[in-house]
Length: 70
Image 1: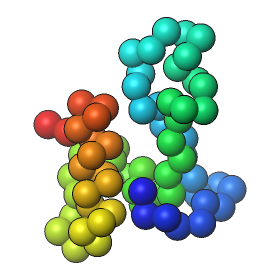
Image 2: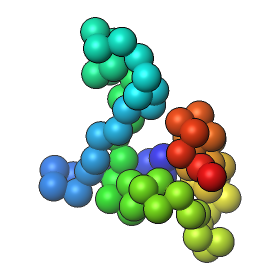
Image 3: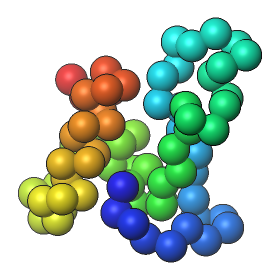
């Protein structure tokens, strides 16, 4: 999302579409790696106003695609 370099221990992997069949759900095209900060924002579902507009747009697009945004 933010294009930060992902470092072991401070990165998280999420599924883009969690309703896929078992043989597709954990395939690379359905996975996204996030830094801890982006992961926390997505987990909370609230994007701080201070977030860079490009990053905010990517996060909101992901949340909408995954129906995580209420």
